[in-house]
Image (cartoon, rainbow, N blue to C red):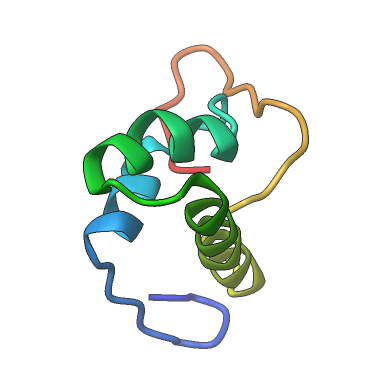
Length: 82
């Protein structure tokens, strides 16, 4: 659920896989090619477009942070989905 606007998101299997793999270090393209495509036998271009749309939607609602660079967490801090 978005704290910004109370939008409630339900995640299908692919979205759940992206959410679980979003560790702040792994590029979305690696998640798509290394996890989504092998698991769901989907075209990489289509999977990439759909994954980007999903991530952008979450980002717009303040649920996920999108960055061009890895997001480093401070020592001892709990891991977050980024």
